[in-house]
Image 1: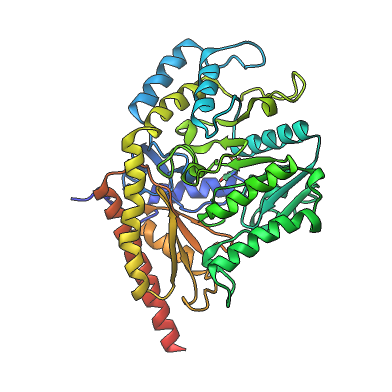
Image 2 (image 1 turned 45 degrees about the horizontal axis):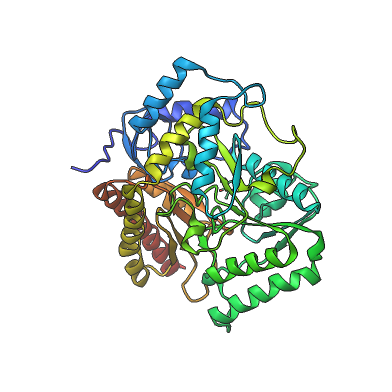
Length: 453
Ligand SMILES: Cc1ncc(COP(=O)(O)O)c(C=O)c1O
């Protein structure tokens, strides 16, 4: 018997009742991918308020690489609850904060002296990284890329791509942010080889120092080594090397935003390690805390030490509960099991969906690295025209079959898989069969609709 157990149609009556309360009480600006309410969660499984058992491929938007509630994390939390809940690192010192910084200094790429600052969430950490880079260089300019997602605070909205979903009506945005095209090889322009496209992208980055911002005004280049919200686009090694080269040439700081791609998600602690490129700063969040809110900026000691004393900090940043959760999560995330698990996820996703591309013309691309995989949907594989409208139908079909997942993509035409990295093979296969079934069904309905036109 499989893991999924459905007692009601989804969403069930209790989920629907809570949806009514949510609609009345919660800002409608808060989007929601799956209209079910969760009562309990363990590992890769969710139990909803109607007693249905569902497989979770969303992991709280990539927060639960360790799965829901690992015993070691819960034990550390229980112990910490009995000791103290909050001190504030500005008020006094406490060991879990220091220990987590030491750990991140040793785990992030780069054989140089490092320091870390902890904070609460991803956007806050990105803001901190930019502050450090600006203070260190004495410059203001930041280069970011198309498809990037760096958060929803005012500065990070300016750095985030995809206007209609994340930015519409919220401006004006922070200045001194320059956006360049990113080589997404699936979308190589017609008539160009991938190699030429990559070559042109590297040239364009260099040219930005003439066209957009002088090197002497550039504080940092911020890159997600695997674009996350923008559709799990692995940034080619050559382009990351070019960023490194431009930063070396100009004295700008190379910042890897590993909020979604890091913390063991792809089979290495940080995705950029797959390329050998070493950034000056790395930003961690999401899976670092196993579900507790924590984020970190780790980088060259001289950059992290460049502001005046008191120039950084926050009330809750590096909360003791989140620190002990992160310390336990790191033990899991750096284990061989986690590394092998991430590789297994990629292998199985490719094994199931790559052959499906022959049969399903709307399945444009299967891509990603390790436990960060995505499917991109198009009107047809030749035109690659993004098909955004089809994706909610697939997500709905998956939910009805007992699988929770999320959309992604600059054109909102992808579905992404962010499971527990050590998800059991049988559980993953069961979930992906539900996804495959939902895709087949939507594809068939579309073929019938086309034939009827
Ligand atoms: C790459 C990346 N950067 C920044 C953020 C923002 O993180 P948060 O939502 O914790 O502010 C996210 C969130 O999805 C992200 O994926």
